[in-house]
Length: 117
Image 1 (cartoon, rainbow, N blue to C red):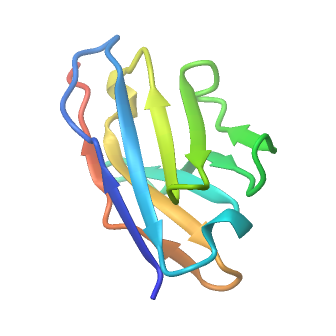
Image 2 (tube, rainbow, N blue to C red):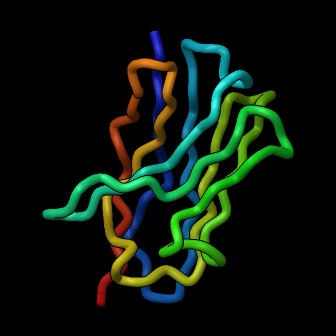
């Protein structure tokens, strides 16, 4: 079955960096676009970044993270990453790795990122 396991979340001071990782299994990883979403307390889940199956491929970022976050993938290891730089308090959220195997969309359990103000 499809499994997505995120790691790398932590509490970090404003301006700091974190690298999130997502280990994927149970599907043909190299075939699908992979995405990162986040959900802050009291807010809806929002897409942060996505990367197409073929590298180099189409990459998309939310305006709020453009220029600060970098999504990447390693098709040989079934891994997707989110490098987060210059973190801000508004980046505080649970971050989820996700894949749409249409349908449904699958989610990991999430990893908490906290940037205190």
